[in-house]
Amino acid sequence: MSRKLTAIDLFSGCGGFSYGFQQAGFHVLLGVDNTDIALKTFAKNHDNSKTLNLDLHKDEAIDEIVKSTEGKKIDVIIGGPPCQGFSLTGKRNENDERNTLFNAMFRLAKKVNPKAIIIENVPGLLKLYNGKAKDEIIKLCKEYGYTCNSQLLFAPDYGVPQIRKRVFFVALRNDLGTFEFPDKILDKDNYIGCKAAIDDLPNLEFDLGGQELKYNKKPVSAYQKMMRNGSKVIFNHVGTKHTDHVIDVISQVPEGGNHKDLPPGVGDSRKFNEAWTRYHSARPSKTIDTGHRNHFHYKWNRVPTVRENARLQSFPDDFVFLGNKTEQNRQVGNAVPPLLGKVLAEQLIKYLKDED
Image (tube, rainbow, N blue to C red):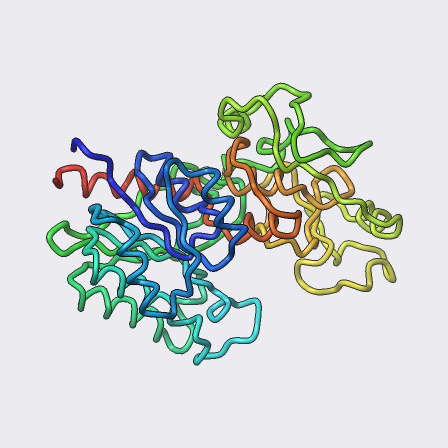
């Protein structure tokens, strides 16, 4: 194929999913979201990509996207529609309008006729409301001329040092066959643990770091070397100043433990499932959230920095997050791990490489 394959990223956030596609050789033409600071991060880290701040509930948003592509051929539409309506972490409402945002991907597909559509979401989408959402996605794929295959992917199986399960729907145009998901790269015995992922970063034991720091250790693991990606500096590595009380509570949580391991009367302000969770150095981290401050470093008595969480999400060190720390954490936690996006993109290329 002489030209680069192209992709559009809907509900892009900072662009973790499409960054993986960029790493695999795609030209990401456009990122679309409704959060300005996330789009600024997207623009800073994607090569020659446009961004649009749009409400994808509206039909005119689809027209604006089509106009922005300037007639270029679109090979793939990717996206992770907001999962709040499907998530298991909050109250679920079948009529939550966010549950139907995936329709925007098909409305755009009708206009630009891509070869493939990839939808990412939380596992809860598969079973909630008696499977109505899953059935609707598959029905739409058939109506628009696509063959859909779906699978739950576990991020550590593909080299991401984080316990994260997500469902992916990959719809190929009918003439291109049925997408087969890539084989696992790792098994449970050789998953990448937290220490192998982030131990080469400054530990911030005596200071709070900064938005731009120099490395003070050499990389040891293959993952650390991959994450450095030739970068000479570390971005977004700023520590959190905890109260003495919080530090005292964290210090009593054993490696890999949580609130259940605390002495009676300690840490009573947080008693839910993820409360006072300390990562284990030899295991993948818990699912990176959007900055709720419930997870702690496997060794140091503090929450992980934005950069540490970004590493655990497989963002390389030269990927810069913009905004304040709260905004940065939200961008990291909402993202599809780039490494997982890259694995899917490389597998998808096998189905598209012989196309004009």
